[in-house]
Image (cartoon, rainbow over all chains, first blue to last red):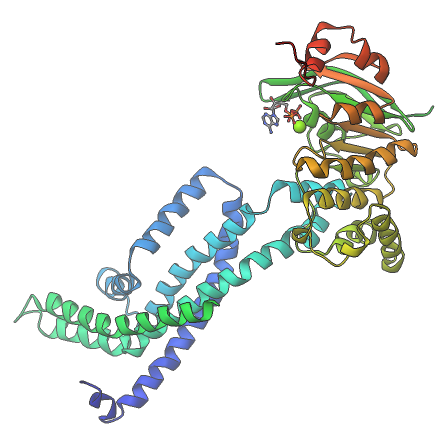
Length: 222
Length: 248
Ligand SMILES: Nc1ncnc2c1ncn2[C@@H]1O[C@H](COP(=O)(O)OP(=O)(O)OP(=O)(O)O)[C@@H](O)[C@H]1O
Ligand SMILES: [Mg+2]
């Protein structure tokens, strides 16, 4: 069934290392996403048409593109197009931050937009100044709205990173690239074959875990 | 000089829509002014101008001789003297009833917390909501929320109270419990401007009635004359919309 692979050589160690790398990547990405997301979310609350339109497009791209595709684009794209030699880790951090920032900004925007105007007006009508209004009335409400949503996003990010890492994206991508490079002359179609295989591997690894996480989500709901 | 509030020739426009033009009003200390008028005539906008929640394009509003202006640095200090209760509920959902009431006196007026709480509890008792002090707004009915909103305004010891259709969003059976509180405030000599569609209440509470229509004060007077002998045809028509008779 393929489980014996885990017992071969130091495969188990490599898998665990992968998880460690995954956690590191998700933590860095989460921090970047929160910082950039809050900044962009506040900018979005200003409701400037251009900012909003650009962000909408950005969010759509992030939501439509599977993270894996983004990873391939960043990892191989930068090497090919820009001649940069990006590590798989750096590529992952870029992709996950790109994704997390969009989602986080949308959460912040939503939380800000969800505070009714009457909350500001009720507060200033009591003689509170702008700072006091934000400090005691608006921000506490935003934080209360944001916490559950952000935790949900962060767990999703960690889950997704681990999925990618657990099947050893570093190895898979590296090996994949090496195969493509090595066979450029003899077999120009290698890229297709390699990507198809990688896709299949991802699917086989992700699908059961995604089922499990869905099941757990349901179970923890109550 | 017992005139507290002076509104001198104010004009309010939203872009090119004129809500009212050259409006004048003087309110004396202890006077209860009730404003009525058709929906959309600008009653809420007028009250919001008094509190500088809206800016005005022309004219001047003064409270105790101090000009009320949205762009003034010390507008918060003037707003302290103006208590406002809105039609839609505006209690702070993340704070308990007691915290809702004591927030402004403690943070704005810098009163000791214990003292503010003591007064808050007395006021809550007065409106029959002492038992709700540790509840959150979502656990209260609409009528209870509005009574808390009134207490929250009262604890700032405002010089004038503005009520904007405070019962319009309530179920009918809760209207009275709120209006009773407003009426008792009117009777104890507070200065108030009340916007309402409740004509019986208006008549009981008002020292002076004002009818606004088409961006102007069309008619004003003592409640008795206002309701029994309306002089203008427009007020007669308006008052008729609140009466029911059998003749078809
Ligand atoms: N922010 C705004 N921008 C543009 N127009 C506005 C704005 N606020 C109010 N208006 C307009 O100003 C007019 C007066 O509105 P206002 O809410 O003051 O009426 P009102 O007398 O309080 O009505 P109601 O009895 O329904 O509460 C209306 O025609 C309304 O559409
Ligand atoms: Mg109104």
